[in-house]
Length: 306
Image 1 (cartoon, rainbow, N blue to C red):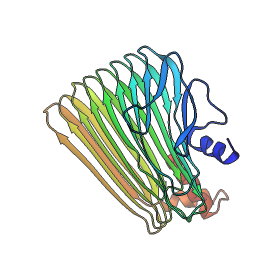
Image 2 (cartoon, rainbow, N blue to C red):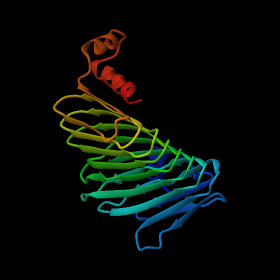
Image 3 (spheres, helix red, strand yellow):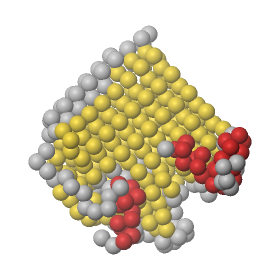
């Protein structure tokens, strides 16, 4: 890999070299490297779709799977389907993410559809980062879709981060939870310029004692626009919480729409939404320590999104 490709891998997957264990690196629409292990098999799809199947054996512990995507060709547009089959009682870390470096005039786009089938009692931590770079003439577009199916007692933590440089993104996540399943989602987004970001979460709490905790933190600066929609449907005895905290700056616009539906008398559902500017006293306090106003803003934003 050249230095640009290495930089993208570092940004989206914290990789400074080819990882140990199971991995699949997708590069400019093709395969940049792949490795399976005894417990984690990665195979190309055979149904005509572009993408891979990741099969993790039951009881697999302390293993990681890296599946980053990097794009350096202007005008490349792709739709990729990745399906994860996590066996019962497994406990794994999955690191994804997409980095686009577009130095041309055309739009580059990656749309990834990830479907998770998490077996009974299994635990998954899923980390996904998005990053865009280039000279700013060609737009970087990413539209990730995540479908989650949690069997009885399964647990999934999902961390998504939009780092910088994504001109347009529509992020869709749908989840269905069975008995005693639990889902935790943490989203972080920063937009600037004329960027647009939309998040659409929908969670069905079907099983008894299932639970979901969905939290989004975002900063919208300059003329960027953000939309946040979060739906939780309590279809049985369950607990659901959704929260959106946003800092708005300059001429940006932010819309937050939390939606709760209780279809069972024992469904306990909570929503919170807060949108506001950086407090003046926070800026003053940091500026008295010697920071400029811009440096103070950067520190506040960094802490808010950490």
